[in-house]
Length: 296
Image (cartoon, rainbow, N blue to C red; front, side):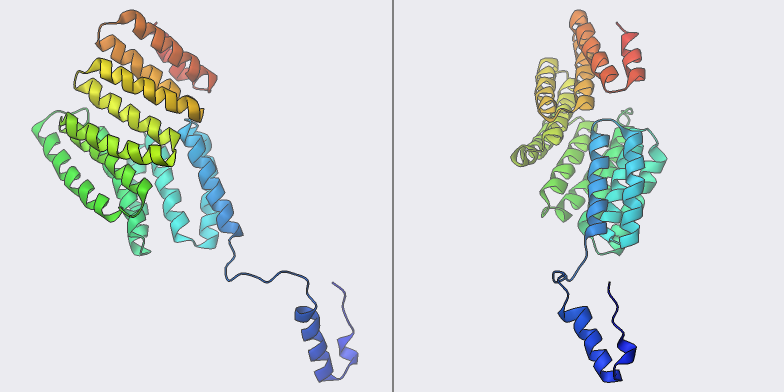
């Protein structure tokens, strides 16, 4: 920027000239009341991390989240901070780092409550509840059922807090489906999953709709309704194909192999597992592909 020899002018004249130079002659646009460049970058990194995670690239997603976290902290944005920690918990759980995932969601819920963000705090708690139900699913005891009933009651309280946010509400219904499934209330479980599915379909959230169908397939399979479970998995595959979600496709073919095996269709089970192994290998999950190929 060009400098004028203000020191050679009378004092007041110099001040007025300086004021005119820095304000009146600027061609820069008027500034808004807030700056969003750092927050926008953080949000973009978070979205990219979630995309990588949804396609099974969990390690990559964690690295991207680290960049998003630094940006969110530098802008001191509570919403981004909570959302990033929620996503971190989701990824850690997918990597089977269960204790770290639960700690992440607890931290996100605490920050959400502290920052006056009850909806985000409720979302974090629902992810924690869902994960605990997944871990509980291996048990079929009276104590497990009692725990599931307690969690179901809490899920309903959390759902009441997020009704203004359709995606959070859908997540709540999916979590409720997990609780009902643990309690072997198959019709109630599927009904909850379908309520989530309708929200995802209206919003054209393809990967989420595919996951809802995957959950429905799980409920039907556990209840012994294998043909209906296979139908739900085929629909899940249709949505994941539209989303080009390789990890979801491999997971559904993998699940189809298990359902075929349970229903006594050994050849179909082999074909489904072969298809799953091909997709796993194509998207870089060689270890999972090898595990399936040992069953062929």
